[in-house]
Image (cartoon, rainbow, N blue to C red; front, side):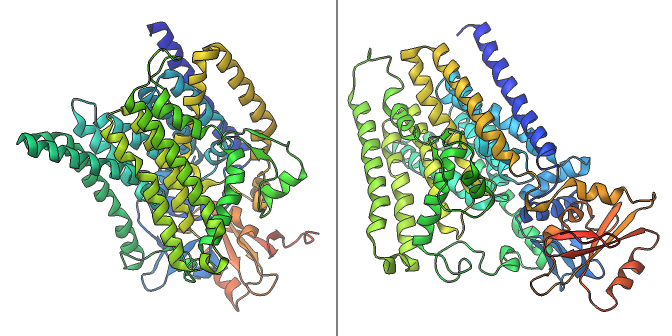
Length: 606
């Protein structure tokens, strides 16, 4: 490839990375207004503020219940306050919080991810695959949405992509140890950010490494040369050590927060918020039947949100689905249709040039493995529907199915390693990542739709590369220009007709809006503000977090911010205590019921 053509690809991916950053910046400001719109984001912001101050946990302020925030835990025995989530994402978010611009972290990571996907796709296949995958990632409705939020999925996708790329490099570089250490660092950060996703990403590579190490051991024994094993395994050992070292951060955080290193902090908020099957898991217990139901519902939206390829318009039924709990997404999505084709091309067809090369035995074996696997996967999915409902309610059946699905996803790795074809192996590893992310999610008791199907988000880079494989393969028959023109046209149409309105729909979601804070600051006389929101904590009209979510976002965990928002839950003498707790501040009184709050000297909201 000429240097001028290489520079064009570099320029194109640089432009895409800039667009990803710009889209995150625009939608973060224009739609989400740099405010948390989910309880998860409230907890992330709280913990990030604590980390930005150089502390592990926050203090329990006097009259602590007045500072209640969702998913933020008070430990009275330890005199600590902290978010329920693992510390990885709040730690990274704290850098943006210290700068006063927390939104910029996800915007920056979005740009980095686009560049990493290009590098990975180019390394595994060619530059066209890398560029197409980067394009798909840049304009994915799921990512455009998540990149604009304060959620941790963008970072998880970036870490997963970087880990896979570093793993690929450690097998080929003359100094593999540095790539092993970097891969371990990225995987370790993923573990302390999104543990279940980290397991799904790591399992295929753990299986591959184990089989590869066994093969090298056998070769070393036969040749009586132990060094055959030592050199290729040393970067993997380094990877494991660094990963485990970073993983320790979570129990350290737990110990600082609660005095119990192994405690699941999620259960401090909801005792049923655990992974697994049975009455212990989920509001009404979790079963395999519910897992399949959630998967079918979520896949219907994933098929549209992954790349925006869908038909049906943006009618009232779609709006209702995206804002209210729904079942099946009303429109037909096509984003996932090319994935099996990409699998077949990657394992058996990619290295052939429009029929000029003859088929060999290895090609036939690889394709046969894939076809057999797809048929088996379809059977595994279909057989579940034939089981009686009573069988699907048995917790053990959930684990049986989950184990069988995971094993089935990993079995072909044995064949692809022994066939010594890098493209085929990594094609399957990408496919296995998608399958593991999907399968492991069955063990969690709830699905996701509001912020897209974010529990599947960490697999999107693998989906983008496998889809790009199909489109780059078509260039051999239709030409590069035709494929790019059609792809750009489809991308532009999808962005205008689906992606932009899809994200814009979340403007003021959960009744969180910047105008609420603007109305408060318009009343200030120059002094720091104490905003007291008065409302009940029991009954149908009890105050919910949405009534003062904006104040939670700007209130310091240490009670020393310019604006301090507190909840007067109508306990006897609480109002006077709050006034005495913050002397010298201008006081603004508000009333609240349910999700609504208004100024005490103004009429209630209709």
